Length: 600
Image (cartoon, rainbow, N blue to C red; front, top):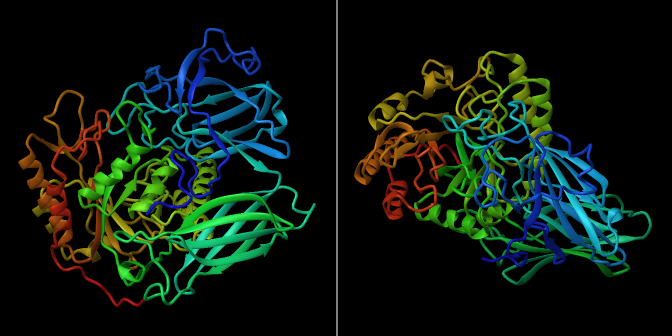
């Protein structure tokens, strides 16, 4: 179901305006290895011998037109803009992602700075624009520091293990939009199935004291108006609980979102002055409830068995940046064709258009933060700030059903026994919970959990019989640390008891299948034929599904990435194996899932 808010290539699909301009494409570009750019005022006069780069692809990629995989700490960008010239309008500059420290100048004047490589950030550049030609200059500084969140980006000269070429500078869409002086800056939509309402929070920007303003909201489903509400704007934050309960529409009186039935409501929001529209934006939401009860994960009151796949979101020639929007759509379609009902977006905050299409197509998403790899005061500060930006930015997407801030003790290497590192993960858990009270949070995916709503285990054992024997009937011993799993890691950090959380095998498989080759990497022994791959995939997946206390799994991984060859798709995102063969194994019933008392 295409949403009313949909605009092809629009970078922020849950807050859509018609007046926007993409700045993707050709920019002037320069390396600043001597760190002389600021001293020589490149923000006023850009170097005459500049290169050309295709934004939003980083200089490391083939698609950028430069294809230099070596590390350069400081890079500069320049583009000429034409002023729109609309009186009474503000021009906002948005960068969806720029890694890691970004400075922006317009016509030689410094506009602002942002730190963090994965969250969207914006600047009001209205006051810096002039009639006619305007010069936009962006400087990005990145490092090989393991104290900054970097995900799967290498911090050494060459690739190693499952770490890949670094990502420097602009790697997501850059764009501008025009807004009135009083406009809707952000919104937060919280579905409440029990009360049959959508709880909306609006953040209004501008001088709201100057005049009287109202927010008007219209909610529709499949073209039919469901509800209309109007609220006075008395302060920057406006809240409105909008009832959408209509008993004639469905058994619950509302349309619910989930895999197989991703029903979504359209929303039109207007800021009014004396009844006249100043600002109009389009959005959407899904009505779904995710909760945990008696060892089960429930979606809309029913037990949810999750068939997930690990998705690192890399492409051969463009790395972390998708080649285009269609590439995102194609990936989701291929995963669903193989029988997966969700994915764990690993070590990356994906392009928000990807989340839109997961919303539309009914694909479950675990949202995972890019890891740092050293514990320090600076690492704690950088991680916390950016993680909270990300949670707020993507909160309203119904496809996201789980937050995963930490993975495999990366950045908290002594978490098993170190109280400071344990307290850091507890702090992130409770900070996340203070913003989002509805989604489960996994604080250290894979092992050595502290506070966690789900107990997740990573195990790349390649023999299905060995795997089944390790876990069958041994939940209590796993929870007490008597049984270890992958790489001899215990399921819980010291001092944290198992309290009956649902269990998911959130990494397994990783079968290397390409015929091998120098410098390639995968888990376990490489398989050379489709038959050998399917036999191993079938046996290990079936072993997991036969475990009565396990409520899902996450297979590693979607596609090959550089030296890592354990994808179900090639590095060009083409099928290695006919999708129906994978689907049959994924969707086949196996074992009896233990389900506790469920109430709706």
